Image 1 (spheres, rainbow, N blue to C red):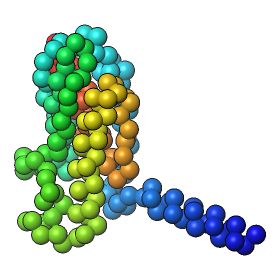
Image 2: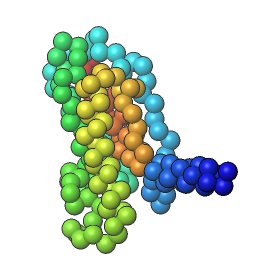
Image 3: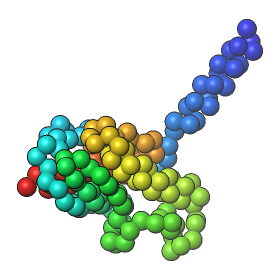
Image 4: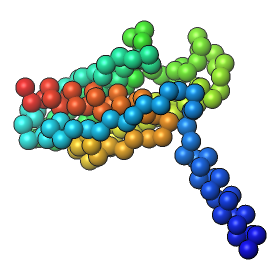
Length: 155
């Protein structure tokens, strides 16, 4: 019985550790995509770029390509408050890693950018793109930029 209880406790601890994130960042509510932005029936063929509002971490910029009422390509980038694109130096201080945890979190968020864009192309609906633990700010920026880009495509 003790072995079963110990194994269960270890599994719970492992599961909890895998779901954690950077607790130093303020918690933000994940935004849900609204149905009107998901509808591509009125979308016109073309390439559309839209951004989210800026916050203390910058903003998100999404470019989508629409052909025959389908999103055929998407690229989501993070833009720092200074206007530079977030890259392999994101989370460093002048290119130097001073806080390994902060750097890892920042780089994980960048990896999530690619996943958000790929899911949008695959699933065709903003509301079907999954949030990723540790990348809530990026997810919220993605949702806002995606809704803006899709709305542009309808004008």
